[in-house]
Image 1 (cartoon, rainbow, N blue to C red):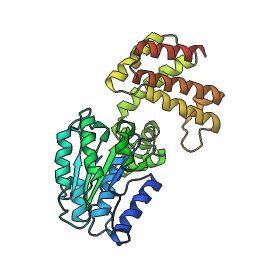
Image 2: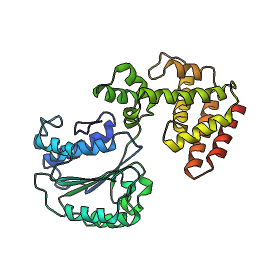
Image 3: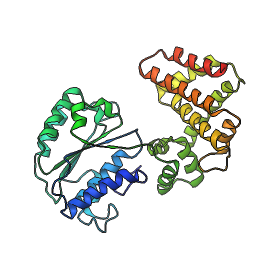
Image 4: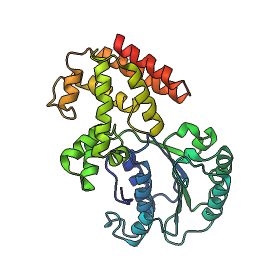
Length: 330
């Protein structure tokens, strides 16, 4: 999805707080910003886009009339070429941010801004900072220049040092509503029917919805169908599904996370009891029909337990087999 300084969809309360801060600065009701913000929450929910939007609100020379990217400041922020806005991010997914990167950022942030408003640094995937880099970052947090604002964006705030977190104002972002994800997709040209399906499959993450393709949806449906076969006692090929789930985890394809989202949709459908209710499609309503919500929820807990066990380096085949045996024998 193209980067933009337009106001993101969703997260109304969080964005309202940021907007109020930017308005106060522009109207000189606040002479000093909080020098550090931490935008934390799940991946793919729009934290980084919100950081870009807020940077635009702080630097935009036409903020009362500019809707985003209609002025030089906003266009340059979206393009990554604004002289007062720096983005520090890992070179590639899974890469670290090192102490040298932070030292370069500290030198840059000590310079006075060229245009009105603060000098801004956005640290994307801040959890990628090594312990040494985080220690160096403390210098900027403890002795910030009066004209600098640091925005940390993290999908795993617990990976940051407590001393880092305590020196930032925290804004915690949650999952998006499916309707917001659908509107985001349609705004970027997605066909409405497919946008609705992608939104439901995204688990509240617009980034994941954008990455999903019709082929990705079909691949997700394969694992859901196999799981439902075992759930309903129609299939006993547990070892086959164990191998498939293990391979999906290794390859980054829909697996346990998709099963957990599906199971929670079944819980919702079992309460609502109608495929005509907003956000519930016919398959989910059918899968949750005549099921005890407590049983469905307990099954979701088992899936979540398996995900945590794998994150703690549990043996994938043993963990997955135990999960599926529990599903079959429930």
